[in-house]
Image (cartoon, rainbow, N blue to C red; front, side, top):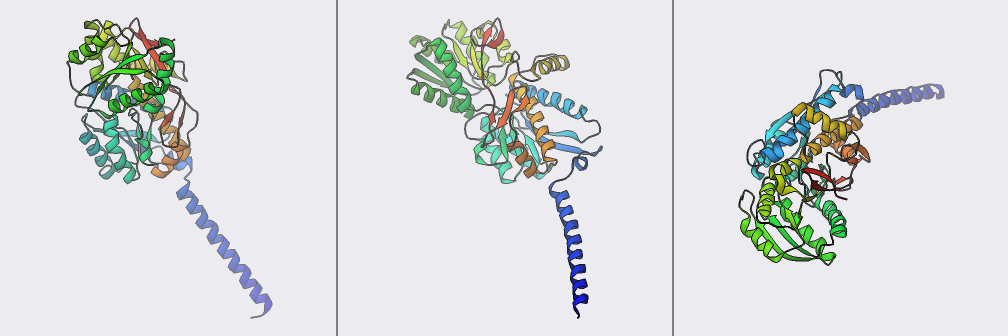
Length: 388
């Protein structure tokens, strides 16, 4: 082969390799980083799994408000892009139990093939359900669970509620500075992770501040009579009473404390407007540490409250607000990922920083837990308002 022939052959070979290489790169790019138009086909639906307590004792306090928040956000997101990909829910009943939430997660993953699951509702359920999502590399976002450490099990799981280690220390700092309480009673549900973790955190923070816990009483989820525990607490005349409980028990505790004539303020984490309404006059003066409130001036919050009230005939609760924000956060992540692949959505969620929501400027920390400003509220004239 002479020099010219060899040179021509080498040139053609290089051109061929480059053409094939560019074509292969283009295909890889389309697979790894699909364009927005590829995702936003008119007839495309994005299926999202949802696990709610539709039956059982948590239906009214968690299931219904969470579902309303999701529904309002779903309508807004789909209506905002009539020619784009539409979100569709596949809803499973978690039955207000840990076993029910686990079963629902397994069905959504192994039968329905979803890439994202919203839920479950409580920390006890989340503790058992999140590992299933992580093991199968499916994104899971709980809008309402808040016990410490649940998102740290892996990189596919996230939470939108402010966690115990953020909310309680800041709430105690605000209230103890103003009320100067030194002798404290605590009451908590010994069967629920959110409640046991909450009481443990309260006691840790108070001990660090030199505040004495003079008595700790317990009950079990589903109980309706708290008179014995409250009577023992009343006898010791504490400055304040911390209550760590799920919503179903909160009104009863407040009402029975009121009936006994307890004058010490109750500090009840995540007290909702529905709890206040159910407790009536007994809720007056109760203080709560939360991540959201109807009167809070955050982006879009006034419109959210008005739209929720108009559409459903009731004001939103804290759980409605968090589920509403959760779906908007997920929609932002999917838009940023240009994909519904779980790994791409996971990475996009982890990258969210200072995203405007009704909760405030929202970010996820390194563990997948929420970062935004906490709020301390007090019941005045039957309404939850800023504690000032």
